[in-house]
View (tube, rainbow, N blue to C red):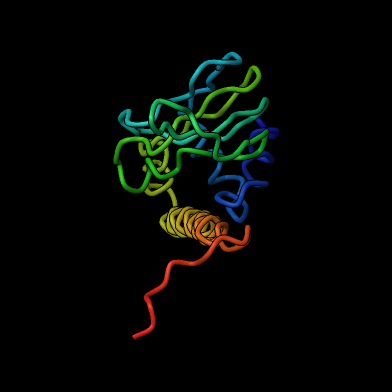
Length: 165
């Protein structure tokens, strides 16, 4: 098995505490994806069926609003994206575009199912780690939203209020 890929996965929050033999089972059926700079890994609204662990390159996560792509964050080698697909199976909530040529490991529910069959405890740990990562990202999004809501007051604009009664 490819030790380099196992070490890469063990450096991610989702797979950090997962044992090497379990990661070998996980990686057994995965596909390596090459995406050239400027191309999409996936687009917002598409059916979601996999997550990715970036082996090389950089990507931009964007949401389209009013016909404009709005940059949310940039990710680089060792980061993962698309993990919501393995939990809720809803359409993609954002697009991911390669900023430079990228290589990534594509992980599907079928890959996770092999782990489920091989080691239920390790499977449960992966699921908990995905939930923790999604929770962490939600907290960051909440903080950003809070900061955006506070911006008008930070620039000296009056806060909307009710007149005194």
